[in-house]
Image (cartoon, rainbow, N blue to C red; front, side):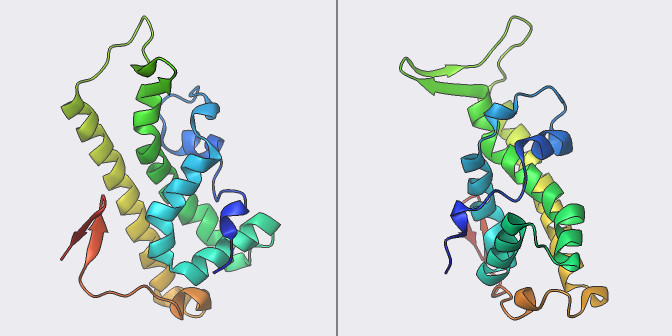
Length: 171
């Protein structure tokens, strides 16, 4: 396995904000490259398979995406990954950790939502990412793309009826 974690993320903070944040003025500094990498590893890598994920990361980093991979990134992966990044950063955006502990970020025109509302918001964000992920996998596996993604096809993730949902293995 190659060390593709050193490469640039598959999306930028600006793309995440423009794809799934209602407030276009959201500070891009709130979405770090480490948060984007976390979303890639947690939600994208296993769905694509290690070899295909590494191929995309390597080509994206070098600016050498094949035509098929460019279409995948532009029309499917960017949108999907953006929602998963939003899911991963929601708590960090609402709360901040520092030398004085964990504090809530709030301005004079806002109010903090209760934990159940935050959980519903996170689940809705996750659901949207999952919908875009399914759409992306359906595209890759579609008959029209036969042969366009050989690394994915030769490294298709195992479909044994088990899946992971928020760290819980479901059967």
